[in-house]
Length: 493
Image (cartoon, rainbow, N blue to C red):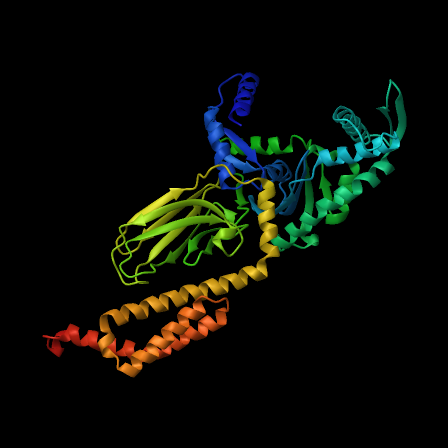
């Protein structure tokens, strides 16, 4: 990436006749924290000062939204050579907010070319055994015909068969439409998902911005317009519209727009959270949250006298850490020794305008603090992000069941350790019968905690609590008496 950016930097400086002092780089909407950081690192290696990383659909909206001075809900339909992205954006009083994103990372213009090439092979009688070289020639002819049919109703096609023999035929727009309609249909499912995630109805959408060379196809424009029931915007070259938006944003960032005509609010593609006891995920910032953003949540210690806390930052939609992606780990040390549950550790997640994540953990009483900027080994592909979202929906029911079980097992462990600690120091407060009943309740809870029925574990916890209530009250009385020993009652008033 850095080498490519170096070449682009040299071209830009040659064209502009001077040194670049800053750049706005656009990235796909599905890029996660690692990929965004990788892009910034590559730019730094190329000698570029990155003013802002900008989501591609947001850049396209900038190109149209400001020029038209429009407000409302807009759709960005981005069909490139190899991927498809759909974004729902709201423009309100100069503020762009990406409400939701979806897509298909295995669908693009190349698939259209492949479908047409297969049709050509069938028409020419080539059969299934086609060499790589011949398939390359077929796809080139398919691409040429597809592009030509954006402007004319019919085009002559030719295919080299064998020994200098050439098959010639005709492909018209109606035939092309029949070939590509199933592929266009595949782009509409992510559109429905994006609408559902954004909580938007079709009649709220004002227009659709078309991005990517594949959207030059009249059939794609027609089908998209029919689906969204609104105007399809094609005024700006779909291959350049993202670049135009990035240029406009760069113009704002360097101060050429004194009143800051716009503000861009993107969203994060996957939820961010930390690992808690039992291997559970506590989500701090949910998926599709607008960035930049910051959110804090309080956590506590699990054991008496605990002086350190391991913070494991994860990304994903599942309930268990094992099913999510690990982003970073760090430790908070120097926590004052306290009883379990007494410490208050505030964990703050902050996502900046470039989508990069910083996590800080601070013990509230002592002020000790530790933090990390998420810069993991470069990471997820767009397809993996999409698969993580699908998995979260497919496993939602079993994930909830697994979480319920883990939570009860953690609660059982906490109850067992608390009672065992109390017995170690104050067992003399119990009669023989009381000790027998308490030991039996402990043993039953240990056995149930090894099982898979969270309701039985809950019942065993309640039984242990009931068996230890009198014991807890006596311990409290004994503690008060010990504290008051040698003092007069007036001293406590």
